[in-house]
Structure formats: structure tokens, C-alpha cells
Image (tube, helix red, strand yellow):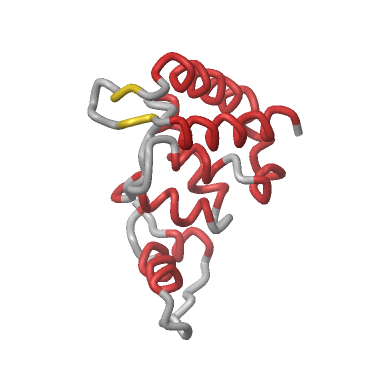
Length: 140
């Protein structure tokens, strides 16, 4: 499978700023897409990068589990995807994303302050953050 560099046709070269985020984004552009983790997707989607290539992969994970964790907290991949700066790019997957958001809301409401079957915890703060983000996206 190709890399984002190959798909975009752009070689960014070496990072010119010594930030962990900048370095990771540069590294991820060289990584084959089929090797991306949920955390890799969260990082680049959170930066609004290469959404046309990354959205389908993220949606596939989110359709399976709306609270997919990309190495920060349950639901962080969904939160990154529905961040306001990405809204214009999301029109192509509107129906699928609406279903994911509805399932995520239902999971949060039914499991708030409980440990999910796989050991992830959805507490009040996380639930409120995700609920607000989903509402903002759905009400836009």
C-alpha cells in the first residue's frame, strides 16, 4: 500500500522544527497506509492532513467501534475527525458519520462512569467532552 507522500506526490523532506508533533507527522507521511494505527490516524486527522485518504480508514475503525481509542482516550479518533476545521471535508461521508455519532452517543449515555467490556473507562469529563463535540458537529 502507498504512503501519503506517494499519494500526495510531495516529499516534505526532513522536519525543520524540533517538535514531537512535527517529527511524528513527517514520519507518518512515509509510513504505508495499511500499517497506520488508530493513533496515527488521530494525529494526522487532528492536524487536518490528508483527510481524503485517512477518513475512509478512520470511518472503518469507527463503524466497528465508535469509541476507538487512538492512544489518548476512548473516542479520541472520533473527536479528531469531527473537529470543526474538518467539517467541510466530511460531507462525502455524512450519513456514515451520522450513524457513528449516534452510536457513540448511545454508548456514552448507557456506559457513562462504567468500565467498558474491554477495560476502557468513560467518565463524566470524557462523556461531556465527546457529547459536546458530537452535538456541535450534528448541529452545524
